[in-house]
Structure formats: structure tokens, C-alpha cells
Length: 432
Image (tube, rainbow, N blue to C red; front, top):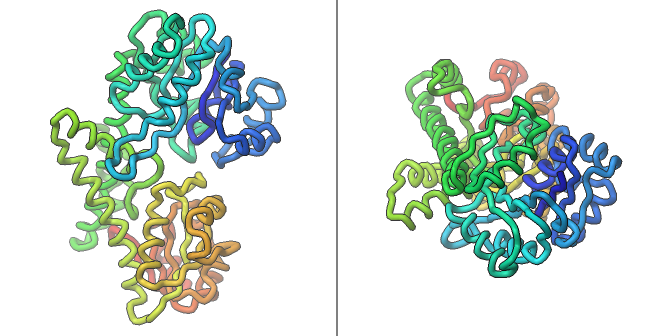
């Protein structure tokens, strides 16, 4: 099949490479010329584990191409996938649809033959109707259908998740459109666990799923607070809970709060959509409020470890919102850093993949280290904020020798407490 993908971000690029690997001919379209130039030169514009090899392989084979021309990507395509950003509006927190709407208007000019236009961006309920109207207003005689094809790729695991999907949700209102999507995923064979629903149900499933997972994370974080007071260990509690198949063991990892490009944006958008329809969603609204408060609370937990120091030097290990990605959007680590800076702390930070991304956001507000030991050099406290596997295997004796003081605050509980104390650290985890 011939596929056009509009957008080369954390959804569009891994999806494009994935579909190329399945044997389709893919053209990725992006309005940012610098990104397209880099991709055409063989340079990835984001980090995802396992993406580099497949990107280079399919680019060399001519199965995937990159362009700024909507015409080049859309003409003669069997399916055009919208994978542009839907950032939260700065005031209302609703999903900002300007990029989706602009893409729909532009692509409408170049539709040839029957084409399926698929919304893969996370979009409010009813967006499919809006996209359909916009395309029809530009090209009244175009032969097309609009479907909802939400993505469920976890950042850091996007390549794995693309080839091992839990489910493929398709919101299609015509049999003709369903047949095109079936053909798109035909190379998966029996691995394609496809559920066909109406378009608005599909749009709702994405928000409902992310809001539920965000609530699950917030729940285990509250349970961690309880365990600290009651003398239990939240990791043992989570393990016991996870053995119940009705609950499951995923998203029961306590930490400094959820973040990233999806959960904060989607929970806020879900709450705003509910208000629009006159529906109260108390669980989601509470989760949003308390998750924001948790990041501030975690920053002060770090400061409490050095409360006798006037202007503490804090070694921050981890800036990405989670391990396996260079994405710092809505990162708990970045928000904790911001709170520490408000309190007058001096930050020296290290992240295995997100240094460049973080520097674009923070500039010269913090110092940037070459590795974890460099970050800890002269530190009054070492704080682990992102669950990179690299930090699990640190030489704790060397880390302690570099630090000025023995304080270690592990907000991910990935460093072994006994090993840390044996190395001379005063260890503070969460949920114990």
C-alpha cells in the first residue's frame, strides 16, 4: 500500500518506519524543513530504542521517504495518516486542534482516487466529523472516508509496541474504510487484534485509557505515602496487588508523578471534554490536581535532605520524563528541577539521552554534566529522578567519593538501599 504520514514526531516517525518494515511504501511529511533535511541525510530527529536500525534499513531500501510537500505525500496514497501534535491550550487545557485542521485543509487539495484519512493524533471526540467537513469544504467531489486510528505506542518502547500491539482500535463508519485498514495491518496476520467500533467510540477509547492509567499511577503514589507512615513497603504491596489479574502489575510503579506528552495532556483534555458535555469526572480532576502537587512535594523532599545548607548543590540524575526516551515534555524531573531552582538550589544534571532536549528548555539555568559521577562532583545531595537502567549499575562507592555529602534521594527506587548504605550514603527512597 502507499501511505502518507503527516508529522514526524514521536508518533509519526516510529509508525512510518514500522509500516515501511511491513512492506508498505511510506512518505512522511513535515512542515519543518530542518527535520526533513536531517531525516533525508540519515539522521534521526528523536531517540527511540531500536528505531535507528529499522530507519536506516528502510531508508536505504527506498521504502520510506521524507518531504515537506503535502502533494508528494498525499497524491495516489491509499491511506493518509494524521500524526501531528495536539498540544494543550495554555489557558483552557483543551487539545489544540490547529495543526490537525490545517493538515486536513491542505491534504484535501491533493486527494486522488479513494483515500482513507486516518486520525492517529490524540483528538477530542467529534474530530473525525470536523476533519470530514473540512476536507469536503475544500474538495467537494473527493472520494474519501475519515477513520479514527488511535496510537498506543509507549515512548521508549514505540518500536516494540508497533510490532507487538495489545490491540488495534479502528473507528470506521463504512465497510469500505474498514477494508483498507484491514489491508494496512494484513502483514501482522493473527497478531493484529483489531477492534472495529464507531468513530466517536474510538476517539473516546484513547482518552479513557490514558486517564485510567494516570489514575492508576496516582493511586500507587498515594499508597506509597501511606506505606511510609504505616511501615509497609509499597513495592511489596504493588507486587501483591499486581498478582490479581483484575488489577494487573503494570503502572503500579511509584515515583514523582506521571508526565510526558500524553498523560498530562489527555487527562486535562478528558476533564475539559466532560465539562463541555455537563459530566463531572471527579476521579480525573483529583488525579490532575494531586499529581501536580506531588512534583512540588518531591522537590521539597530533596531539599529536606539538605535543609541545613544555605544554597545546596543538587546532582540530578535524569531529566527525561521516563527512561528510554529523550522526551522532556511535562517531565516530572524538569518540574522538580524548576521547583529546586525557585528555592535557590544549584543544579548539575545528567541524563543518558535527554541532555540536548533539556538544554533547549532550561538553557543556562542549570549545569550539564558529562556523566553521573560528574554530576555528583561536590554535590550536597544526589537525586535520582528518571528510571534509566544506567543508574541501576552505578559504582556507588565512586559516586559517594565524588559527592560532598552522603545524601541520596531516590525518587524511583531503582538503587538498592543496602548497597547505597554500604557505600556510605544516607539513602532515602519512596514508599518504605
